[in-house]
Image 1 (cartoon, one colour):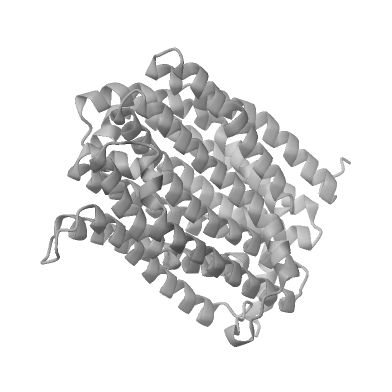
Image 2 (image 1 turned 60 degrees about the horizontal axis):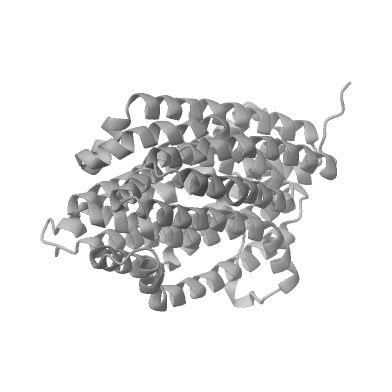
Length: 455
């Protein structure tokens, strides 16, 4: 039984830099592997045809909503679990875990229905090119109907992250991503005696990796995470507790869904120029994951630390933690900016880029990546607000950035008839959002009493 207090005390006593590193580095590694999977998946799809890559790009907004719902509820579970542990209240922690699991199960049922009945109609709202519609429908239907794997994996990963066991969370993500990477070429191209499945193979590899990752997450949580104890036979809906989880989770879900809506609208804007422009935008999203995913891993390591120390009423530790996280996030983003500015053509060639795709893509990557300068600060600020119980601030930041600034800017710049101008909407939006995010961070700290008084 000595392990439990040691794990509890770590987030309240370990030096912040070492604590953040121990919590975040495993998550950053696993997120980098996830980014590698994202790129490899699209690299193999691009070998089918440029239309296949365009189809995956158009499928992304709906697929991202599915992932956003699972991760969004995970944010609420993570924050409330960490806070309960900081308050030394294991009964409440177990109750949070059980009600969070019920919410994730209900969410999967919704995605199942959309996967069965809604994906073809969704694809047809974006294009009338039959090959793109067919590719996107096949891919999306498989990913959504069998999405129980991702919902289960995310939920049990958050249980382990909330108790400081991010190494185990890393193992589950690595397992799923590596299996995905291995089976992508095998199932797409029919290697090693497997049938050639094409786009369906890419989707099957995705859900297979998610299901295996889910099994690993459940087993590790059962055997290595004694602070979260689930007895599913005794689980009954508790709408008050679910409401508490939703209060934190829904703004995060809305925030991510706004991102999906923005991507969907930008695809509609870009398809007016050409399907190649949409393929470039899709390739950018895959490539930028190498920059953003490590920051999200850093973010995932930071949130339970902030939430725990909020429960323990230790504002100094909260301030030192998010300032360190901001510093590291900005450094990562600067490295990404340099890569996109110096090597855009080499990055696009991973996707078998045609001359037209290179002509559009090289200036696109250089223009959009200017937004990286401020993105790290915005991500850390928004998530700190969530960890303090003010997820609505994160939602407002995302809404202002994407709906108020990014989409109108893209529409205005597209009206010039010059595709290159559209890409500048991204740095314009990020400049505005960094000001808003710092304002809301300061407000959340003040309202929670987590400001640090000057001596």
